[in-house]
Length: 216
Image 1 (spheres, rainbow, N blue to C red):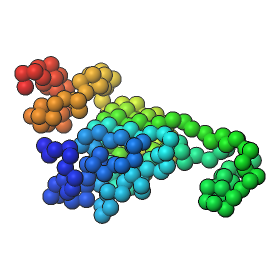
Image 2 (cartoon, rainbow, N blue to C red):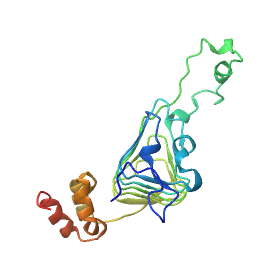
Image 3 (cartoon, one colour):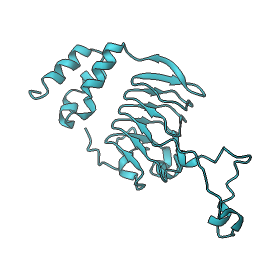
Image 4 (cartoon, rainbow, N blue to C red):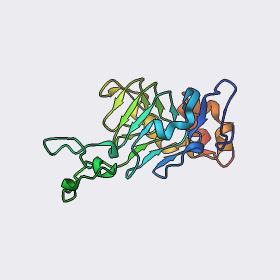
């Protein structure tokens, strides 16, 4: 496999695809090795164009995730106060230097649901959206243009607006085994040697290779 530190292009057939972690500067955004984004002609702008307001909350994305073009994350910091009669952010006048002394004694009460956490080996379809603080489990699939507003269990396919469960990818028993194996945490040389088992559908083969990982 290529080094996860490869910038771009990462392949002859994927000239617009980048390993995201090499283009992240915001300390509130964390991306694991080999997670890629297909950003067409401007993939390197992901953190400014596809992550909306990661200021006080964090976006954590695991390893080997696949983000199709237009995937967006709307963070909790993008919320407006909804407890009053208006959601208008009057405090922006002060922030823009215009001055708003009427605001100075008001205590802002912005809703904050926390961090957005994405597991490993998650596939995001074209123009999918994840709304603030959703937790998405390992191996999940987010359908194209789905809007995720709630947590998604591991190895589950969701779609729609708001996104709903379509089906589980495997039986509960196999899902439990995959979560325990965590192939994405294997040594990268071992992953390379066992790519066929990882992308295959033979759980016994994968269990064998995990069990004898020190001999592989």
